Image (tube, rainbow, N blue to C red; front, top):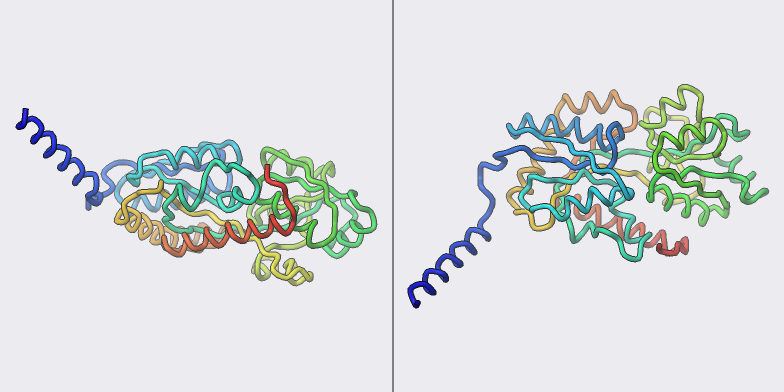
Length: 322
């Protein structure tokens, strides 16, 4: 009996040592999954496939894209958060990770506790556009007409991030733009371009085809400075709203508890992929995606700062949590 107990203790100790040991130096030894929280064809999906393909080339293992849309990205995020922290299931995450605490009493995920940041991949500047039939061509015109006739204008909202931007816009400008929620961008674009809804916030890359086709028109960009491909379009800051900046992003995260050496390898690989000439050329050809690679520590700090900023915006705008 004593021998059996002794052997049990030794086996338990050995298993404990193995569990605490760092990941194998030859990681990865099998395919890596990148979970995209939206359907195929969107910005996150496009970037995941582009950078994932380059990462696969560098790592020598397949990088498989898995789309898990739903609940404004929270279904896919929860799936990754509950996955084994072994580096083989990763989240392609964006700005919604930084707004859930500001908008919900019981958010489904906590970006700072449920995930280990790997790095930021790209920034995605956004802009405010109007229906082509709206008799307004500039933001100052919108501001004047909206104050003269409250509740006249409506805005299509396709994500919690844009919903927060609208609340902030109303709070800081004194406008009362009505919110119309949509499940996806395609339905919102249809209604805005046909004049059923007046305004829309969208990525520059996603919206430029409609601007060029004269289905929508640009009123302002929400980036810190003017965009090189839109030199005549003012920023919200230039229009008198200091600090009104919102630049969504796409980054890579692993489940919390993923070994540091795996995070380091994935971060280095991701950075190599984003900085490769091949990926840079592809991004340059796609209007509205800006390479912005950062390491794990910097990305973690960036996420924390974004969460704090959005919490403060929600407080100032007196947004009631759902």
